Image (cartoon, rainbow, N blue to C red; front, top):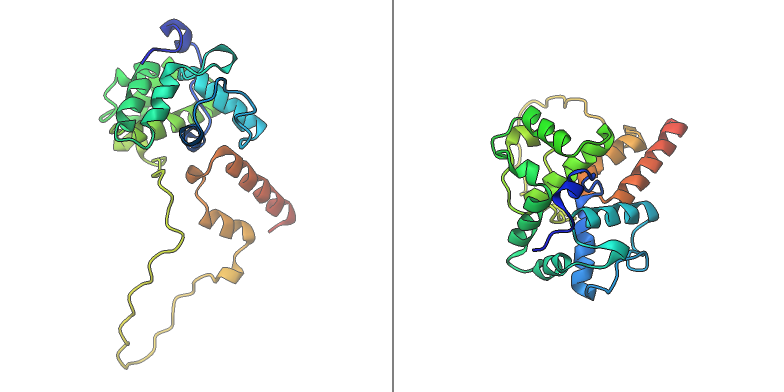
Length: 229
């Protein structure tokens, strides 16, 4: 696939720092509705202003759009590959070109310090931004079938992008307990004894949300905190 600018120009730019789920959702939309003549706000109506801006930045870095939002052939190839058997290969080819310094190291055996050092050297940015860039990269390469060192993934392993089932299967009936002296049950916090903020944090996984969903959750948590809930 043709690249999106000179290697020197790309090396000085910040990689995508939107959520990978947002990026994948956008590709799915294009697959369903077709690639338009131009990518602009009228095409990104389902995304908020901030998320839309981050998504446009990601598309430019990855060489998927040119100036004024004109789609590249690379974007059309990626959209065509979505839902097809060659999605991982097409995505991997794109990532290898745009994240070349990271593929210069052995991602499967890299230590956290080696990985983080290589990423920060290749793509310097503010620490908070770098962390988001790394998260996007890990999700992307995982979706492309690349094996990443378990040491690197420890504590921040991206979860599958496949939606989880809403309802878990019903457990098998328990055997009737044999007669015998009853034992006091250990004290466990009841649901009604927990604060709303604790219940919310226990049920949600930020790694499975897009940027807009995360922003909504953090706003609600701030409200709970202010009310002491």
